Image (tube, rainbow, N blue to C red; front, side):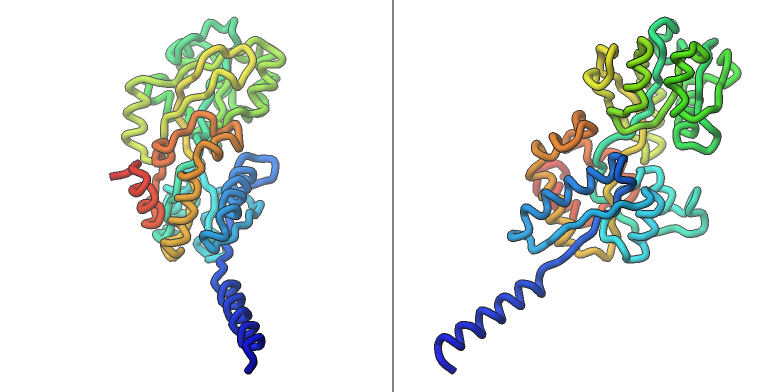
Length: 317
């Protein structure tokens, strides 16, 4: 074998080994018009910039959302997926839609951004603080919706009954802006990733405000339910709202399975933490998040690979 031939053989072996070593991961998201899809895309772009270092190539997939992602991760058809923290909690504990079918292998990576409950009111409603809701006409969303469930839990925490309202309307939150404009209601609730077109639409047709949802009742809820987290709706998001608005909601959580290699989860988590300032600029929904908030509302056990990255970054002890 000549030196040239030998070199070619060695180079071929090295290239083959490198190609064989490359690892492909897929992140399940949601519909292409939602926030999950661009979030998965943002993570994959960051991962692919680091692929020479990590050997990992990332792709994003549009899916049916939280429940689909959790089930598909469990089936081994997705490596990662984004899900609401309450969905992840129910899946792990075998509750709600997962009753009798607990997914004990589900693991969280990071809690990306909050999907916060917004209490949108007209400025002439006289509602300034949450307890002003008594005697008002309010849309609480349809029975069985995530907004309705969270709204009822929050009302109960404040000791407010539906009978304390002048009207408890039960239409979808998508109807809120029109009803507010037509003076059929004083306010409406909705769980959204912010900013949302829903509230922007309302702000373009009527003078609106967002009511703070905070205080001891909220502190107690967050302590009681691990899938809830506090957050802030930025005052820069909506016309006429001149203050940041504290609230409560679920988190959009990046999930995986316990069988996924620690090194892969570590590399993904470290990439996000190392490039966090750049990551925050990739979508308006990330405006108020911090490295520390990535640990709020995880709801299910965190993958060891993610734990290692957070500990190395000094965010976890």
